[in-house]
Image (cartoon, rainbow, N blue to C red; front, top):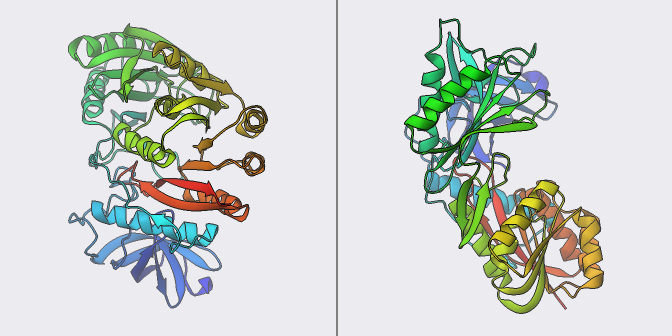
Length: 462
């Protein structure tokens, strides 16, 4: 079928629906096309960019007739126009609707889940629909003689600057603009700053990372290659620190190796405090340049509260928090249960988490370092565990860990997922082994994107 079309050809298409992953699909002469940034009931002109045997992909070249679910501004059609937000073209209430639909579709298709038997609760919306990220890291690049920051366009290393900032916090926006103003003031002088070039590994400025807490205290980390212009950068950062009272902490991170990690292996603390402080449910967290902390704190609290509501109170029970990260959920949960044991494979997260536990005087929580599939079966042999919270990475839970849950007849599982496809797969495994998925809720952690986070509750049916 694809042979009737060719790359570069323009077509008219009507979009039928949005599928998991966030792209719209439509058909031309029975042949399916995926169209990023499209909305159901859009009538569009698209240009074909790729063709496979059974489907193609096309980019919008013109909106012939917009869907009523599309935002009013029709001048924006590409991923780059929307600051890299693949749901930015949808009205917010429609973003929520489509996320719930995508979640249902994945759970039905992959997990075989029947929604007549499972309660799908209302998706939890975000009060902050834009500028909600408390951490951003942007590559620094040069365009028309001016140093700028941006983001990588899809599947490439080309950097773009969006017309409008949808995600970075307002305070980060202000500080980055001040930083760029200072850096660009050296243009045309002998001290002009060089920007890193990854093709030949030359230049100096690589990335800027800005973190802020809820009080709008700011940490600035500039990532550099080599030390050629180090002293001049320190002067720029000193000015930034002295003239902006929000800037509380400044670092320069030295990055020599070429890989996808943003920070280098040495981050030098230059000015101010060495960390920012953030609070969740009365627990104080110290945030360093490389600390893990939820990007959208308010939504994270709603997600945790939903998980804890599903768990219920269990003053006599011992609970496992598997894939516990820096232990945030374990710490909050410890108020409701007798004891919490966290398991996390990243050693630095465990060290940071155990320091937070000690600093906050939380007696009933401990974090263990190791792989969940290795440590969970060992704990289940030794201790009587009344329930488990899983919060795995995108790849989901290893089958060995799920088998140990089934073998030990754990009564209750609360599963937090950042990838509904692996959640569906793992739930299917548990359901086949005698568990029941009682209820599930999607939480909109990342408005303007197609990303879906969800939390489900499974119980052992006798």
